[in-house]
Image 1 (cartoon, rainbow, N blue to C red):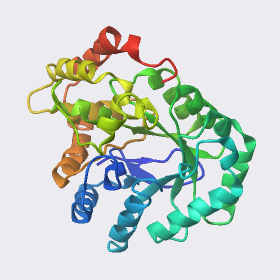
Image 2: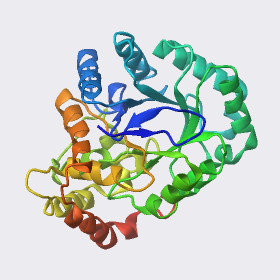
Image 3: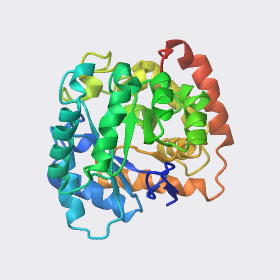
Image 4: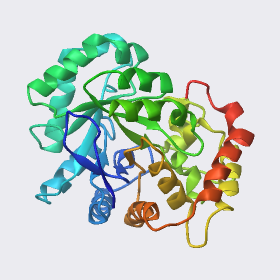
Length: 332
């Protein structure tokens, strides 16, 4: 597994080219029991994954707590835990105060069982928060007091990414990047590379659309966001299927699958393609089972083994232009 340095001068850490997103270990993806969650974390760590991405609201802290207990059993684990904060209150700029930052980080420290959080990211806050000097003053204070080692911002739009990248002490920006979401490649990724800010590519498989397993008839559980947030009913629509119409996404995924070399799966090609984009530090797919976790991590081998993904890469652009570009929100 390639290990890539977090680009900011504020940290000397390196993280794996393929990380693990752990939203599904908390909630909103159907039921994942605790034993299964531990097995996913174990499979990932054993495969060389050294970045676990979580948030204080994933299962109201369940994801953080499971990660904390898992890592406590693996001294010297070498895993960087990137958590997120800011979604415990309504998304209003006045809620992003130094006092709330302290409350949220203290809660995450307890959940994860650590004195200092490795990396805390603002969790897709309003644009006004990303632009405010006071936001970064408060985050700098948390670093100075030892509550957190570094900080970043998770964003919805390219404009938000560029605003965060411009801040001198931002370690990383987390943004949706996948074959259905190409706009970040034009501006956000080059800006991040120039500023030595790491990029974590989230929702890389478009909520499973790029697994290649779905048909237009596929359904999901009632407590799965792919059912209840398909049109943005609960939170930003872009978080579910990357904002793509489900049936259109199924057709697009089928086109991409037709270009794959023998023995290469659609999710593996997708993860390797994202990880090979200039400026991407780590890709953070989720996994509900140990087999999924191992398969995601194994995709990193395509970065080094000479597999030719040229036809796949060309089709990514063609499919985006023909099927997706007109329907993708211009701010994404």
